[in-house]
Length: 319
Image 1: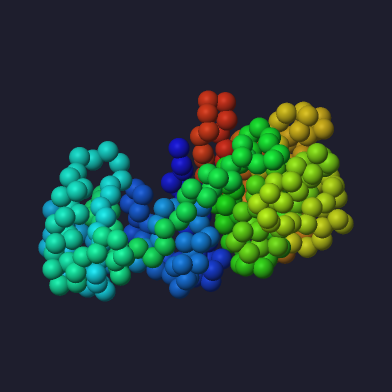
Image 2: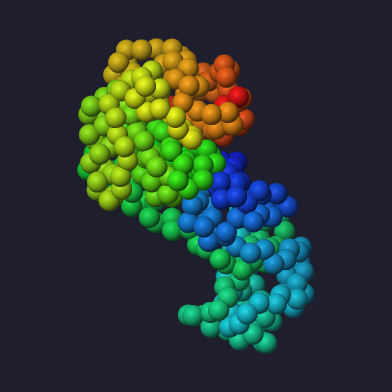
């Protein structure tokens, strides 16, 4: 199940990365309305957990939808879609027909090639929006690790890897480091949104696996075989870090205890990040990383995976 707080944080972080200085206007379950100067199409191309990027037109109570529709002024012809958040009992087909008839009376209706697609979304209220961008969710499914040449258990789903990258708030062209690159999923998502991806791992098998997967996706990254403690000398300065480190199997840490591995990692991170740069990291327990010298803990978002695994998406800022 997706984590709404993570989706919200990703949207705000991506808008910030695009220079948008987002301000929250209103939020309800499944709905986030922001004021931002970020290019909405660029925002749609960057996000992993949202479904649509829309231009907000109006909001009203459930019983005022038809009256509100009369004031909607958009370019025609139009197409209307209605949807709901949660399990409420609503006649969405009826809403679509009524709103389409009201707006289409003066603007015209074209169900196949409309000039404007209007979405009516019911959450706590009813919200009218003009669709600008539809996130291609199927593309994330196609990049799941099971479909890659190099397969490894518990690899981060591409949509969550994309969200993790976005939490760093890095602009296009920035140098992104994943010091536990594993299957290359985080590097792939960073590369796809225009970041310079750099991956390290102490395992030669993982480095080669990342290379195979990135080649399969026709993407590139600078891959280096090294321990996390060696990244200051091997990689140099970076603009942000996004990573999903080992959770505890001794084979994945070469026998090192997890608290010590995380401590050494943050020591190394402090030397390669400038003040204000961000780390987005996934851990099984926030308390393992919450207090790190030289970093400010900003936020965490909990994603339940199954009974024995909860992923916490944590964000830190270099002091």
